[in-house]
Image (cartoon, rainbow, N blue to C red; front, top):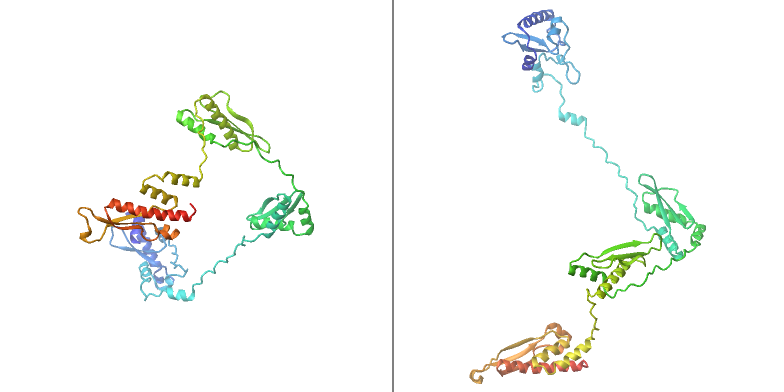
Length: 423
């Protein structure tokens, strides 16, 4: 505080002398009030470049002191006079905040909390929005009735206020408007349908609406789709490295709508292919017809080869019989392989290993083999006769002879299965 006053007040020596005289007179004049409890607190301000001190009443300027004006008493935050509590200086005022001997009646936090208990605000009232789920039976009934008569109900909606809707349904010349508003359009629509079905007279009127005349069948001319004409034209431009075909589509202004299409190709005539105002019922049909004309023209010019002829696919049984006839004269392993495939089995696993025989039974330089064939478990489930080792042979001199002997036994088993199937 003293430093603040020193920084704000920098009077000259003459002004300080005059102020010192004025303050001295003021002190003598109010000497009898020194012990008055209502006396204002004073601040001790050291004079610059001086060892003396002057007493400057708080909230009183030097001019007020020179004029002899009574200083305003200091007050606390609650409006009580600080001088009434016995504090006569700012130092005592600051000390009163921490010194319990100085009588300032300050309330503790605990006492304040006891006198003012915490009362939380009541929770906000939650107003649930009306559910928009429902079966909407009236809407279903009205649509079903209109479908039977071949008519279509028209719905219009209004929003009289925020998030409130009303609906009107029109069936022919009949009109039904909801008098109230609803939170969703679905509810408003169902209310309008319910209004249309609420009275027997309304129901009879709706049921009596004349069926609309059926529209003329929207069938255009038949389009040849034996080939993909659009793709053929695209591939031709890609192979010849020329500009792709340019299609120009058109549509009639009034229903029933009809579509036309023309196409220009690189190297073609000036007159485009196709029909500008065609009788087709779709854009795709019109484009396909125009592309076909362009492809046929290119083939007539000899720059695009004709489509290859399609051969009829032979029947599966014919393929099987022909295959069996061709393999009759084939080597034994080949015949077994084809017969397994013809019967619908997967190719078996051939197992050939050295036979466990006595040394005296082995010819000089010729080992003895055992051989057998094993089919997949899925084939065994379909045909139990394929279970276990099939065509098993033992102690055959040479691996090649062992395989041939095993194939002979396996071929017999496969032929038996074929005969049982009527093959």
